[in-house]
Amino acid sequence: MKKNSKSNAFLEKLQFAIKQNLIPKKSATILHGFYTEYKAAALQTREKTEQIFLTFLELVLLQCADPFSFSHYHQRLRRYFDYHKFALDFVRPLIDISSSSLKGELYLEEIDSHLKNKDNVILFANHQSEGDPQMINILLEKKLPKIAEELIFVAGDRVISDPLAVPLSLGCNLLCIYSKRYIDNPPELKMKKQLHNKKTMDTMSCLLKKGGNIIYVAPSGGRDRSNSKGVIEVADFDPPSIEMFYLIAKRSLHPTHFYPLALKTYAILPPPKTIQVELGESRTVSYGPIQIAFGPEINMENRALQTSHDKHARRKERAEFIYNLVRKMYNNFS
Image 1 (cartoon, rainbow, N blue to C red):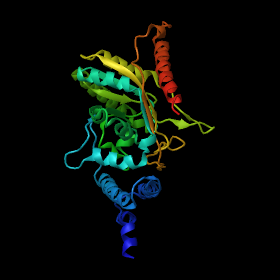
Image 2 (cartoon, helix red, strand yellow; image 1 turned 120 degrees about the vertical axis):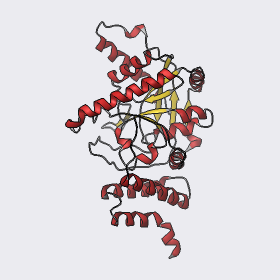
Image 3 (cartoon, helix red, strand yellow; image 1 turned 180 degrees about the vertical axis):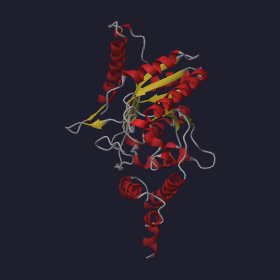
Image 4 (cartoon, rainbow, N blue to C red; image 1 turned 135 degrees about the horizontal axis):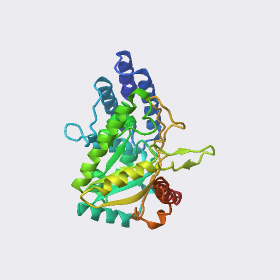
């Protein structure tokens, strides 16, 4: 009886939190499902899973009681509690490292050289999983730990407002924006959100002017999803988003280099099948390999893209060109 009580410590604590109104019922239901799936998928002992979810619950309850206020540029928290390490420890047991792959190491060496010269690097990438920042870190940490730790992610408001996402987000370097997908909801906050995004871009401009920064951005504004046939497709890139990063980079005091990055991480923590407006999404978890590929530097001034006299058409051509680079890399994954 005593052993059974110990093995259910997380569920008991979760039930107590529900009874004490310390967590919204919807969040509690999602967390319960998350725990059940994680326990079945993770390659670690039940005791370790129990402990990591007890810690996770404490962090979620902290967000429910006193939500963390993210700045425009959030730097990972490690001093009093190492959120960065916790997030890696949380995601690591879901990854089959021996079957995972990292491609484009030659381009990673170029990127490392650029950063050492105080140049900037912007990665135009697809986005598949809530745990993408941690998964990228895990595949890079042995060969290029500095890039793994210093990488800055452009993050939407969902990952800094959902109490189940915040504990992982606190361990990342983030430029916090409102995604175009949700900026009109609710309509009365649209102007406030647009002003917030402008300030974040101003902050990014300052980072690029200092030099030596590497930034990941998903120009799709969201995660890849499967089509009607169940095939996962790289989501289209938004031309204005790419153009905004390009123009800000051109005003930098240091050169900025652009590289394509393709991620195949969908199976580990996939998004819901449909896009939902309301906050709070169920978590589906699996154990398996992941694949990441870096491509050659993008020539943003490629004259082959200057076929139109209309600037909007040229922006669309540039976005499609970069999108096709990432999609081709993604399609080359086994």
